[in-house]
Length: 409
Ligand SMILES: [Zn+2]
Image 1 (cartoon, helix red, strand yellow):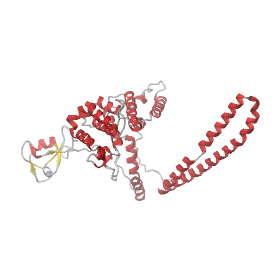
Image 2 (cartoon, helix red, strand yellow):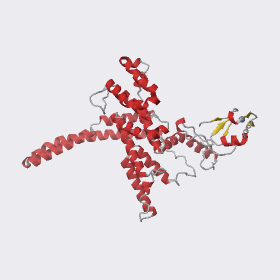
Image 3 (cartoon, protein in one colour):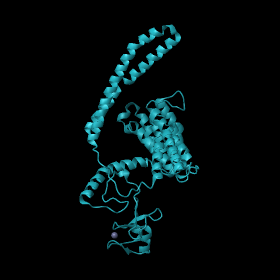
Image 4 (cartoon, rainbow, N blue to C red):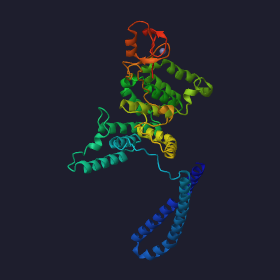
């Protein structure tokens, strides 16, 4: 891996240092100015052309030189890549769960492109799917709108999804490139009710960062003529009143920091004002909330699936080798014979199935833990206890319904 990295660095350094593009541009400039001067004075044409010969030749030579260099760099890089990733067949199973779900895969790809802000690529992708479907299924264009419907999320139609993603991308761009939090704050204000119902702090997080940003010397985009601490104070006075009931402590911290302005770094509030990941964090929580209000997960499912697949790949390759060597086969569909451990952030929807009723727990029928530590669903617990002391179905301990506690997964 080190070798690949080294070659990659060398290559990109060489490309950056390379004069190739500059030489091409200067040749173009030379030719254009020659054309202009000939057009202005046709009698001088032969002299102009003669003057052109040498410089054009030199710049062609240097273009070729830099091309050669780039080629040799590319060669070395591909060779080191080949060395690292030996040509081995990918693990395969008889049962390909994805082949029958083409539309889901297409949807994941299109959604991923939209999430990344690649709107025109997504549009082309969708229209190509539509054309392909139309050609395969019905030339009468019965399916022409299929590409658009592909993106429907529950009740939200595709056109709305696209519009929403465009809005999200704009807000993120303003935040990350222009340090402008106002569009995000406005969005969170418009969706305040839904966000609060989710227990989200987004609006306050954004406003707090705006305060910090002003404090560090930015100028207020809404009130002209003030910047720095004065702007921060003015902002707090204007915007923070609605946060006071819920975030009094946090606001007090922000105000307390004012007293330490000459030595903020060593004050108890230093970490609030000098958090290097503050912008990234707030952008991430914004994306998460925005997607969740649309009924989508915070991270692109395609990205997660591909990363999880990459993590699983070495194990799968090993498994295939072993299965071949031992001539065994794994026949259970949709299930792997080995466990593949993923990082905690890749574990989703912990579900609980009651060992008594074999039903999956829900909000109405949550898992309950008895004092002995065994967990069953609430309905099973009610059925077993009938209001009296009862014996745990899995151990000799006895308990009462009221001793059981709800388990949060
Ligand atoms: Zn028990």
